[in-house]
Image (cartoon, rainbow, N blue to C red; front, side):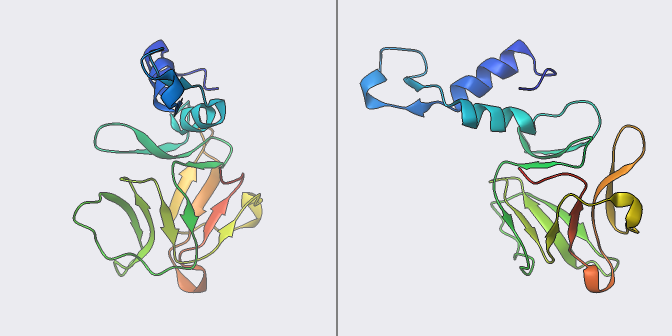
Length: 163
């Protein structure tokens, strides 16, 4: 799981990710069965040392880049899409190029991420020339970036994987 979670965060995650079942209504606190897969995924969104976390206004995590270049999303990733029109009901984390055009958006309402380019996983960052929005680990090494220039604008490069 995540050793940096508090007791209350673990409890909240477990109760928030149960599969509610009519047969268990009124018989237990959660009124459902534990869904360990959903709980582990949600726990992976909470920050540990290093990396970068994007949260909702209420503090719930929706995306996290970890120290190894893995990206954990609450929602899904859509690639090769034009930036979305602003939705007044959604808050968004935006990555823009030097002209102010969106190259990546993380919707903090549902945790979905949209990028203009493609996803590149398991990249050797020492062989690349990162430009744009750069994520470094606690040692200062580049572990992920969203390119914001030229033909590669909107491409997401990860040293690790997308989860």
